[in-house]
Length: 84
Image (cartoon, rainbow, N blue to C red; front, side):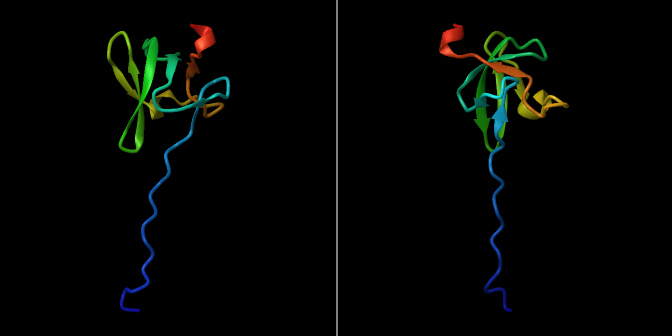
């Protein structure tokens, strides 16, 4: 009635990223890519989308291109301080 009680559009939440070992991935994390020969990458958030940025070449790949079809996890492995 007269548009007074319209529902506000809901903003989509950020996707949750999980590596192959079921570790959560957050913005700024360092990961090793298992696709596209990116090597070590940092995770960056731009708008509502995550990107993997290669430390060696600077190449940027969207998180949607890194999804494993079977597990739906990311085709990356989180690098922790113990791994360095």
